[in-house]
Length: 159
Image 1 (spheres, one colour):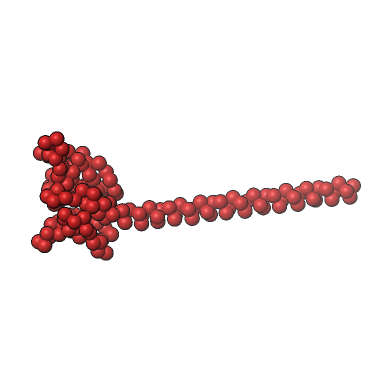
Image 2 (cartoon, one colour):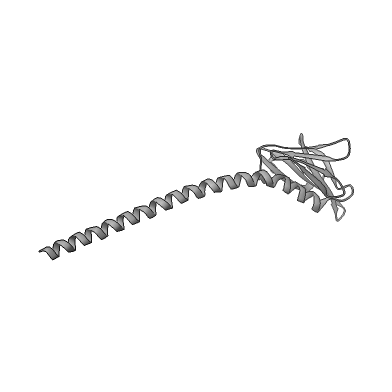
């Protein structure tokens, strides 16, 4: 009788230990999941803040040539414009801000297109482009400003 009681106590003790271990593992997993989710949200927010000016800078470095880059107007919005000719036909690429996104639109020059026709590139809170008297182009986004000197591909990020 004592042997059976001892086995029962051992079995109950092992089951209780297993339950405590399983609950501890679940609690750690749930806590780590919440930490991961918070870190991911912070990382995504920081990424969006840095990527808009980096995107503009890389576009300028890849596309800048004499007479190719200008500040223009696209349906009443200030836009960074890249003009080019291909097969005797003129094309323009417009980079502008609309509906919470920096957008890019490549089209044949002279076509009438809507602001929503542009491809969403980066989600942003703010974005503006303007030509300074010195010939520099100033691009401003939520994380700072970028000064671009056309025809050199050089840019300076100002915080």
